[in-house]
Amino acid sequence: MADPGTPAPPVELDRVRTELAAQGHPWVMGENSMTILEEDQRRHRLGVPLPPESERRALETQAKSLTAIRETASAPAQFDSRNAGGGNYVTPVKDQGDCGSCVAFGTVGAMETVAAFTRGQPGLKLDLSEAHLFYTHGANDGATCDTGWMPERALKFCHDVGVTYEDYFPYSARNRSGAKLNADWPNRLATAPSYTALTGNPAAMKEQLAARGALVACFLVYQDFFAYKTGVYRHVTGELAGGHCVTLVGYDDSQGCWIAKNSWNTTWGDAGFFRIAYGECGIETWQVEQVGAVNLRSWTGSTSVLGLWSNDQDRNTWAYLKDLGWLHLAANDEVVGKAMLTELVAAKQGGRPVNAFNNNGTIIETYVF
Image 1 (tube, rainbow, N blue to C red):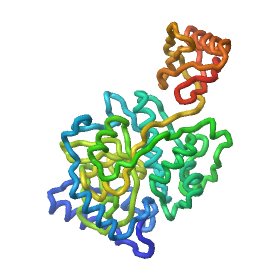
Image 2 (image 1 turned 90 degrees about the vertical axis):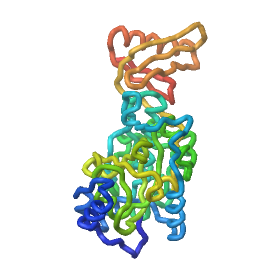
Image 3 (image 1 turned 30 degrees about the vertical axis):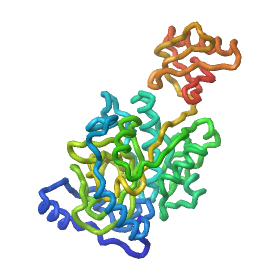
Image 4 (image 1 turned 30 degrees about the horizontal axis):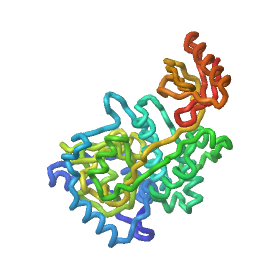
């Protein structure tokens, strides 16, 4: 968020156009869903409280002194989780609306991609609830649409409590829809068992992006950024508007940039995504968080059994469910375990749909229709 009481001047498109031309058109600008808003409306599309001015200057100075090391042993020269090994692990771009809830969107976006990427399941179609994270956990931590929040605080709640799925608490800006948290949310839940700060370490950021698919990052937003359309963004003109949080989904050494998923709908930027130059606007030095893993607990919904596997070890039976991959069949009672296996065998042979309760990779209950 911007400093209260010191509103930045609005986007001056002609000035942005002139500065881009003077600097050889490093990126492409255009009028979009953000530039047509009033200044106070744009400010509400941010959501990270700014640090004191001395700290802001320090983080930008540090950012420009860092080099995103190209020759990192365990990281390729480029990575994009929208096309990793032919699979897209990034969930659709959303719209936070006029609420400073970007931290919830950046954090949830990272969890969704990490969950799919670390499982090797581009078809996972996970949709977590930003509303639960911001309007429940954030509110309990003192965050509001007008104050914003910080990723490290959001991830603490994702670790300690977890976040339910979108259908259990649908998001609307300032919760104008009046949606309420479904009482069954503990049985439809994603948790982050581990998270780590990578702030100020671009080499580690690249390694973890290539290993897990996404990161959460904050950066400083200047007025020219609102007019971004495509290309590699560098600040060329305009005053500081506030702080923002996004999901990093890749990088490209040949272009010298990070690839990010925003929460301003697909009508902004490059279909909702943007590229930002290494060392720009504190993108590596303000707050960068890695989600180590994501545990999932929920009913799968109607799906199909594509494969079954077992060996001579006791209770070592697995089922491959469409879009979910291999899940372990587990039951404390041998009879119950055999009953679940029998149901899944029948479902596979008969092409019948199945609904299973998945507790982080373990099937503990099944329905066959």
